Length: 130
Image 1 (tube, rainbow, N blue to C red):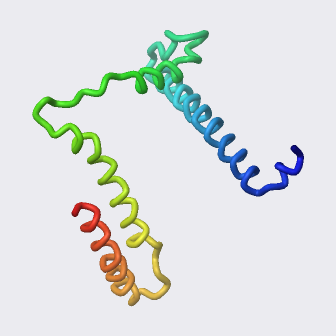
Image 2: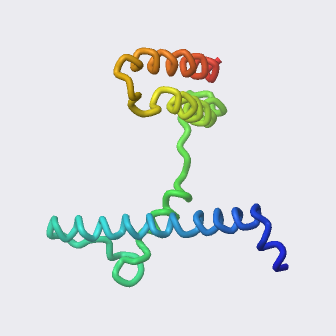
């Protein structure tokens, strides 16, 4: 059992699991804190409906988001309507790194840098929609 803790893939898996469990919780309560501060600055009652002092409001919002009914218009192609975000997001994510590497050191290299991003990024974005 202890030899498993020496395996780098097991350690990476444990770290990934911890990150996937801890980061959403931190984000949820930072959003709760933001709502409380916004309510205080606007002189109104903040989130206080769910749980003691509203501490479970972020969890209730997350459950509402997950259980919300998906509305699909009757006049659209249902498969394409559901798959379209999965086509558009990866294509934009693959072209972004090719055009935003930071500011080059030589000012005259900007044109070459931009051209390289366009030459590499444009075919990827076009190929994703074909």
